[in-house]
Image (tube, rainbow, N blue to C red; front, side, top):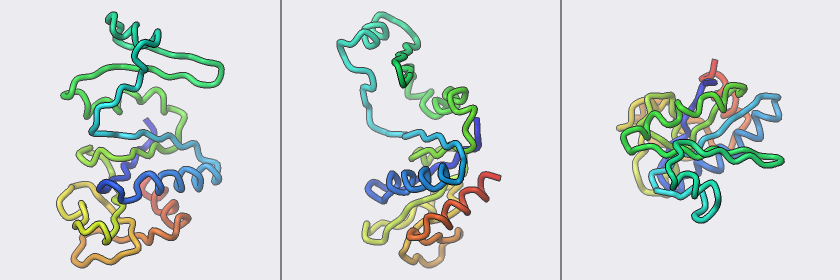
Amino acid sequence: MAKRIHIVGRKNSGKTALIVELVRELTQRGLKIGTIKHTHHHHEFDAPGKDSYLHRQAGAVVVGLVGPAMAAAFREHSEADRMTAIDKLEPLFADCDLVLVEGQQQADAVKVEVWRACMEQVPLAIAVPGIVALVSDDCYENLECPIWPRTGISAIADQILKLNS
């Protein structure tokens, strides 16, 4: 898989907004960017009652859905396999220069944290290994990693690309 960088942070810290801005910035630079959203919540990605859902309910291990402009695949996994599920998606991201993963702070991968002081919680970087930088317009004392100003998306993209090399 292309190099992947996880954008982590607490709920409502701005992870999605940062990823959207990074995708725009990096694609304008001519890069192919893939994204993966990791969630702790159970979501039914396939709609109950639809043909593909019925295929899975009948026992299909993987169900593909191909339309005129998009394709998708649904594959169930156990909770134990959740940490390696991203690795199984690798072929889908083979032509990407970089994959940005939203979340999965437990991953053994490079992580950048989005943090805001107004959330009134300490940065994850204090306790979570692998966080190499904090993206924030707020200060935090005694942090082992650098703080990248949130307002400078171009500079953040430059730093992300340095991590990717």
